[in-house]
Length: 468
Image 1: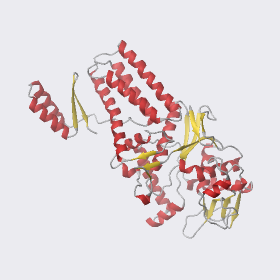
Image 2 (image 1 turned 180 degrees about the vertical axis):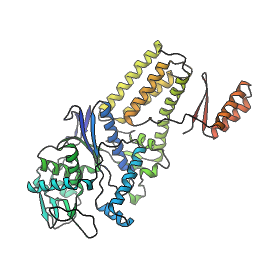
Image 3 (image 1 turned 30 degrees about the horizontal axis):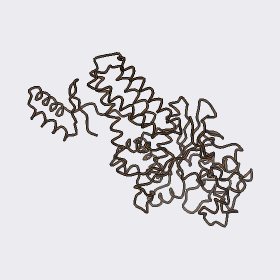
Image 4 (image 1 turned 45 degrees about the horizontal axis):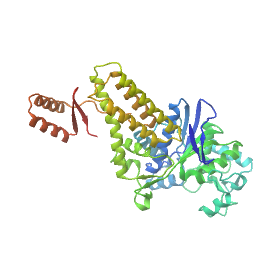
């Protein structure tokens, strides 16, 4: 398996520190609002990486944090007239609603920054003792120039970063590129006791301390959106490696940006959408399927038209599963025929292509293409006219479910029952067909279609599906 490492700018063979366990940290949301589609992409992508690592037999210790104290949190809580903790509690709960909808598994640990104040303070103290941090009247800053490799993730020198960055003018800092580890309390802000007085942590130190506490001084994978490379992840590296004297993360993975209808997403442009907004029109699973339809490092364009295409693609997979489940109920032969054995071999070859795609830097686009190839083979060769065996039906069904599970799609159980009124209409239509009353049969079919029930006449009998 090869992963593109932002740190080295090349694909590298993946070898975790422990051959049986992968330690993985992924930056989570700042919980002051519902998360938007830009946040959803890394959540979905790195959930898929975790799923694939588990599929390959690794135990994955996956940590995704909640940033529950920062300027945005304080501002929003004040606007709402509630405490920062109440705001955090609300939107952490809402995160899980959307995450579950998107098929995102819960992390092994979901730490909150405010639950790790002691660990944060300890790391800042260590940095101060080693000469990497300094205190100015209760504000503690990291001295960027003291860390010789500063900027190694973004592959820019300190001078280049200084020229290209928007830096807040702050005469308290020794150097413009220095950044806050601890912020002295301002009136009305939440604060914690510390050796430097009451205050709260800076954003960057939160992730360093939580990764260190729950995963150790050196981890296997650190992931997040491309926008986090600098300054957040560069700063995490500087803090962690300065404090511990060891490499922080061995593989750094970053997903590409999302554009909306060809333009960068921004509130000012009116094209800013939360996942909750989109889920009112499109199923959560469609959103996930759409996000996986492009390679994670490529930019992706988000539009209603492309979501509609994703919806149709996902429906093709589900229809294949539904057909197999229907055929299984009516199968008359148990064991595979010779031609079905040949089909099994072809399906195995396509499965190998799926694994090859996922091994090549989590190429979900090609992996989905492999799933569609399986669906095409199955639709052509395992259908109502071919009188398939139970064995090939079971194999085809389990294979689609297996590979879908890696991607976090096609796992839902679709509705298998209909109410008595609809069943009565289907029975009446069947009776009309027996009596060759085609006019009545067609009228009933049309009525059922209006009710969202699609009928298909097969050699095994009438098959119904609910229009999605």
